[in-house]
Image (cartoon, rainbow, N blue to C red; front, side, top):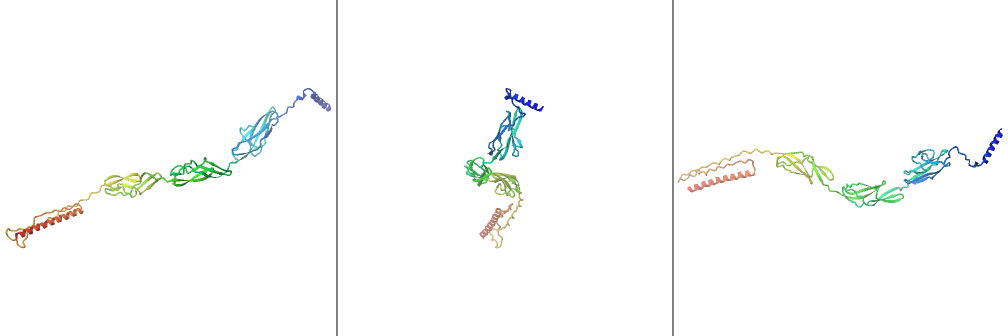
Length: 371
């Protein structure tokens, strides 16, 4: 029985093969075929360069090809992180940092019999830092201005720097940092120039600015603020605050005050002068008390001498002569003893003695005439 069935099947196959149009019969596969995928070579580049990696794929059953790129985690195509929107046959790899990264692509062919995918081999992208390494810098040309006045700002026009690297040198005028920007120290001042972590210096000359007094005020009052007319100002304890274009200081000397002697009573302003600036403070001046006058002394009159002679009679030798006319001199004591009053007393005494002498002279002459 088995032999008959096998023979029947073979005969049927021979008939079909001999029938017209048998060559056009196709066998339909049961599933989609995987695409054929080729990867680009590994890439070596510098920082910031453009690195393009790619895959080339062919569908074996006429399916539509699609792509998805991954960044490899371990350098193989077994595990990776999906890169969003990286769905083309080409991919621009990241070159912003040094090192080696690996990428692979999953290529899918979608056709009438379904979809089939192939994982490409990993592609290495190595990024190297090929930039020159700066070893030092130096000033090539000085700024056009190197002489300043204290307080001026630094001018860098004309400044250039030569940069020395492991690959040679180049010159720059931009990207430089200089300090100090304001020149507050007089004399020869050092300026520091920095570029890409390296530094060099040059010097400028700074002329000192003259210190000018802008204002003054009373910092502390003098110990004595009450006086009597005729007293002299005492500045002990007086201190003033001086503001200049450079600093603020308190000083207790070097200033002048006016008035120095108080000639009137009441509240008075004392002016303090320091340089071209001035300020004032107030003191109280009292009247001076009036001294009590001395009592007036009156000098006693001198004794009066009287001489009497009878007509034609001779006077006895021991008789008393007639006195000279009576003179009374009154001397008043001045209120205060001084050189003028003493001189006046002497003059008066001399006048008195003169009168007495004149009286004696007249008496003597009359006596001689009677003889």
